[in-house]
Length: 94
Image 1: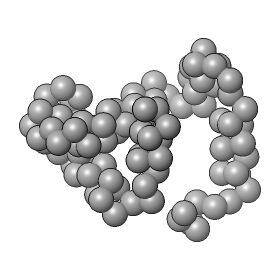
Image 2: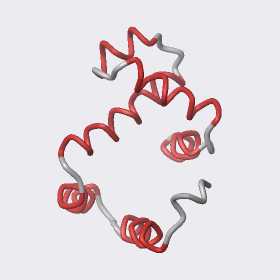
Image 3: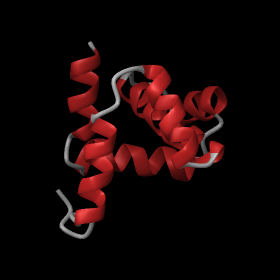
């Protein structure tokens, strides 16, 4: 965990997210919290991570998701050297 983001405010945000019970509640909360572009960017990164795990090429990923190669590279770096957050989520979604 990156100590730079470990604050009371971030704890409060994550506690709020953990209280959401349904997909509709997530839509309601995140539409108030984030811009549409921010939500789409987050979902795009998750889709990029999924495709990278499936060994898709950067070109395939860019074509399907519209992500830039810089975004794909950033997500790839997180998969390789990050905190395994993507893996944790993907394992729980399986």
